[in-house]
Length: 269
Image 1 (tube, one colour):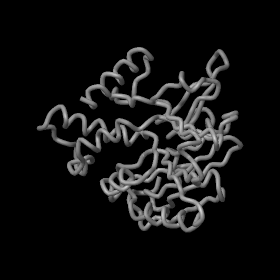
Image 2 (cartoon, rainbow, N blue to C red):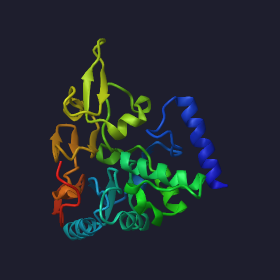
Image 3 (tube, rainbow, N blue to C red):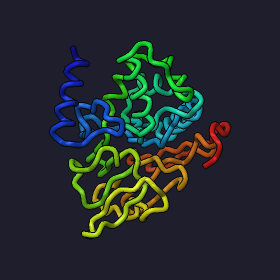
């Protein structure tokens, strides 16, 4: 029954807002989650870049983060693309589900969710070759991915977490949900406003145009690696491609921590 209620509420949200997920999937009940002071407490918020199934590196990063903040518990917050393409996707998903942690929805999380819902709707559904690993996932995993919000706001840190980006000048509630998980740049329209672009070579980096006041933490852009702008920080440092997995404390010690990838899981971009 809870799953049915979730789906109905998601459907109402989609039809009333005219904003769809990339794959026209059920939306979370709360697309824009707020973590208030009661949730954060005295914990150090540790924002982690795209994991993409790099389980061993994630464990190492979490261990280093806990060692760094010995006097305060940490609260991991993930920028999305938790899974897909990497070596131990199911292990990463189970680890994050077992933790007290938060995450936003990435484009690869949505791609996996589509596969799981296809199987839910048709038990005979055959996963495409690159999604064969999804056979080990369950309906519980699908429900977890469905509930991932598109943004997480942390007022006490003046922070906003999103997977790919936001278009400057558009209120959060009016942002296109698909843009939030696929964009990299913005380009100027004839009326002077900005629109999202998935391409690196069209327009300019959206993060360079983001005016604040909230500081946005995001991923999705392994080509550019770590990005540091006045009001936006990019944390996808390409662990999947043999580079690094990066996390950043956004309160507490305010340190950046990176661990080297154990191998090249995919050819470098």
